[in-house]
Image (spheres, rainbow, N blue to C red):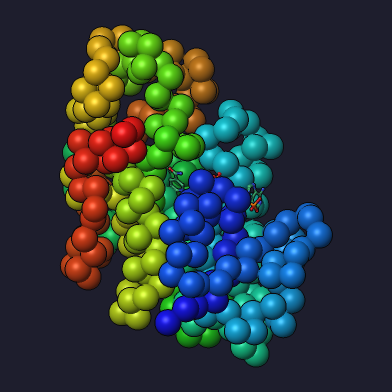
Length: 299
Ligand SMILES: NC(=O)c1ccc[n+]([C@@H]2O[C@H](COP(=O)([O-])OP(=O)(O)OC[C@H]3O[C@@H](n4cnc5c(N)ncnc54)[C@H](OP(=O)(O)O)[C@@H]3O)[C@@H](O)[C@H]2O)c1
């Protein structure tokens, strides 16, 4: 049955792909729009404030993806504040508004990140694993807790903890493609750190699954079932492109380029994450291996 879905962060990598994927099924989208004059099907939203209750009328699900981009600039104090406010404060105010509305969506699917686990070596991380340390871990924990007002009034809340989302249209892979195509790509640091990834195609399928499956709630790891080290990831990308991968990026150079905290959080941290909740619920990945994902993405 066609549904009405509100979506924040609709112009982003995941938001665009989700709309492309679900529009074909007859679903109607109501994007939350910031700062521009809303169109007829759009919902005006000022992050940090509640949405007017009347806009939730007839909305079946809210997919909340919005947040200042994590990787687009160095993590100085003002940027970290924007990353925090645009997720934690914006989500809390949104959820307080939802909780106070007379009619509200029955499910909130909220983005989160495997950064919640921090840097954990070769420990296998499942949804029940304790959170880790560092800025991203604290940010993701606070972001998930900010949904409490919605949970408290009985909205089913699913926190999709995304791994590195692979697409040629944006995100980490799009940034890596140019150096790898020129044959100057290589492992980052020791290359022993685990990189949990998922294809954008499986991300939008997992969001659809989370909307549909009434028994799914709480944290859900959205990562492929095969987790490579950075070295294995690098070799698989080189093979897919038919290019050598002999030029490593030393840890100190990554830290110089991005700053220590950001390089450690995004490139050097090891997170060996398993999609236990998705697999136990019967979700089937269409791109379970890197070879399949790269084959589909780079064809
Ligand atoms: N891509 C990944 O590998 C990855 C991994 C883990 C977690 N995630 C999380 O998943 C979510 C979706 O990812 P994505 O790759 O689609 O992100 P994205 O491309 O950066 O898009 C995020 C969207 O959020 C909105 N936004 C930007 N700045 C904002 C601000 N200051 N306040 C409120 N909204 C703002 C924008 O949409 P509008 O202009 O339409 O409002 C933007 O297009 C994000 O929250 C991200 O942190 C992504």
